[in-house]
Amino acid sequence: MQVLVVGAGVVGLAIARQAALSGHDVTVAEITGGIANGVSSRNSEVIHAGLYYPTDTLRAVLCVRGRRMLYEFCASHGVNHRKCGKLVVATNEAELEKVQTIKAQAERNGVEGVEMIGGNAARAMEEELFCIGALWSPETGIIDSHGYMLAMQGDLEDRGGMIAFETPVEEMSHKSSLWHVRFGGSEPGIIPFDAVINAAGLGAQGIAKKIDGYPAGQVPRLVLGKGNYFGFTGKPAFSRLIYPTPIDGGLGVHVTLDLAGRMRFGPDVEWIAEENYTVDPRRADSFYQRIRTYWPRLPDGALVPDYCGIRPKLTGKGEGQADFMIAGPKDHGMPRLVNLFGIESPGLTSSLAIAELVVGYLKD
Ligand SMILES: Cc1cc2nc3c(=O)[nH]c(=O)nc-3n(C[C@H](O)[C@H](O)[C@H](O)COP(=O)(O)OP(=O)(O)OC[C@H]3O[C@@H](n4cnc5c(N)ncnc54)[C@H](O)[C@@H]3O)c2cc1C
Image (cartoon, rainbow, N blue to C red):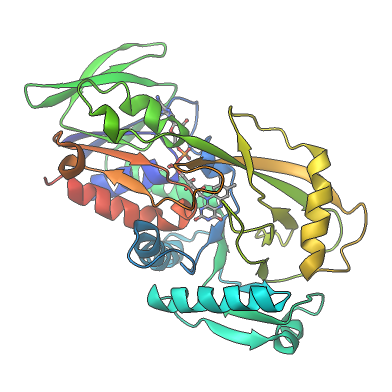
């Protein structure tokens, strides 16, 4: 089939690669001038183990499967990564209960190797840490996400797939068994495809609304959950990822490490109405406060505004977490069309498993 994938983020690239490996003729349309210019370039680059997500949700299933596939992909394609492990820490009795609940959920999700450890054992691993107990997750890691996306682009192009940059998808309609897709950009026009996959991240709802005849009730609302990061100017204090217990809308301001060993903190959750990518330095106050619950010796003046990312959420403040919404023909009734909505964390980790699922939908 001639398959169009909209969006060259980590999810679109994974789907395009999988479709090309399955023998389809694949084109990716990307509105910007390169791969990974959207949500995929503004995240924590953590390979999540799959601890938190409710049993049998897409996030739980695809994270665990995607994580295993991703480690294999990194090994076979030489993508830089490190299985450094993570500690989810409790700093008081109430948090200890929460951490125990996370452990039980992780076990239900089939996550390997999780164990509760005491405060002393945690401090033996990370001497700067304060906690009264922690969940140790050995399967969590970090990845060079750009290297990962380049490797997928390589596989796609080796199989004859191509990416058309600066090529926005504007609208589409289904006629005579084909999707007629209108593109803008410097060479506008209409091109027919057998199948279309909308993996446009923050743009996915906008595209779905431009699909002629697509049921309006099947386009979920888009909520923007900005996540800000602050960099740390000194020598890193930790060698593993350190997470507090989750907060409304996110996993809490945690220690993230990159492969160069630099340490930063974030992301927090800031509910916004319009996309913007500035980090307000005044948010540092709440970062100091939250980080000092588990790292009391964080020096004054050590945090500097870094970058931010925007989560394409389906629910807002106080509404609980939504699952990924992957709408195929059985959901919306239109043939060979898949729309992906709300692919926030753990979308990077889940990408190869999402791709497997979505390409399977093209058989319907
Ligand atoms: C702050 C933050 C931290 C995160 N941390 C992690 C983490 O540590 N681990 C993890 O597993 N996940 C994490 N995630 C989630 C992960 O980053 C996302 O799930 C993933 O990057 C989504 O990829 P995507 O391909 O769906 O979207 P994107 O990367 O946004 O790709 C969509 C692409 O579509 C293009 N596009 C949009 N409209 C059009 C159009 N009309 N025509 C053509 N192209 C279009 C965009 O330019 C973009 O390139 C985090 C997310 C955030 C925001």
